[in-house]
Image 1 (tube, rainbow, N blue to C red):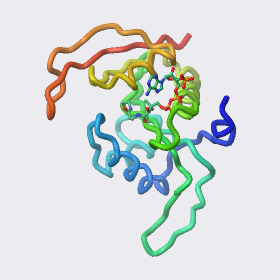
Image 2: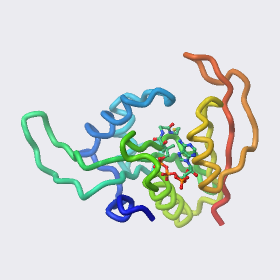
Image 3: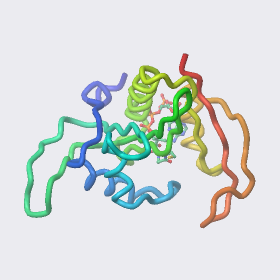
Image 4: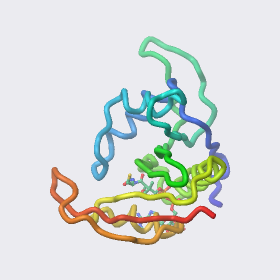
Length: 168
Ligand SMILES: CC(C)(COP(=O)(O)OP(=O)(O)OC[C@H]1O[C@@H](n2cnc3c(N)ncnc32)[C@H](O)[C@@H]1OP(=O)(O)O)[C@@H](O)C(=O)NCCC(=O)NCCS
């Protein structure tokens, strides 16, 4: 594990993380934008769609300044929707300066462990065919390609690569 990854803590996303999470999400070109309310829903365990949302970073400060609550130490996040025995990895991201230091794998390992405890046996995802860094990352994390959906994405139009990881 890299020295950076050793200092990272993985924890549940809370409402105090949403500003930072949306800030990170706004920097991603290869990932569809979610509205702020979708992240708030993901962090809410009582939401209609059951989701597991984790962040990578230090503990939330919980402090509030003029611009509202913040958790600036968050360097990555992941969200999965659950329908045991399956779950879908909807998004995972690490801030650009922190990539290739093992933070993504830490997030995914923690997510998979929690999903397994919740009765999930298969974790599915779809990713833009051009997002080779993410596809390599998913392969490194144990996912295998299971299919392809032609012209699944729009703006720009592109195929989706379907991948699955078995959690048992
Ligand atoms: C995909 C992403 C989350 C990976 O996070 P990360 O913290 O950089 O990943 P890790 O450091 O844990 O990488 C683990 C392994 O995955 C593979 N990998 C990760 N990024 C890679 C890249 N850019 N190119 C090739 N392989 C890569 C490598 O095998 C790596 O191990 P190594 O560094 O020892 O070679 C990150 O690149 C990211 O946030 N991308 C933008 C958002 C995105 O596209 N998300 C996926 C779609 S929702």
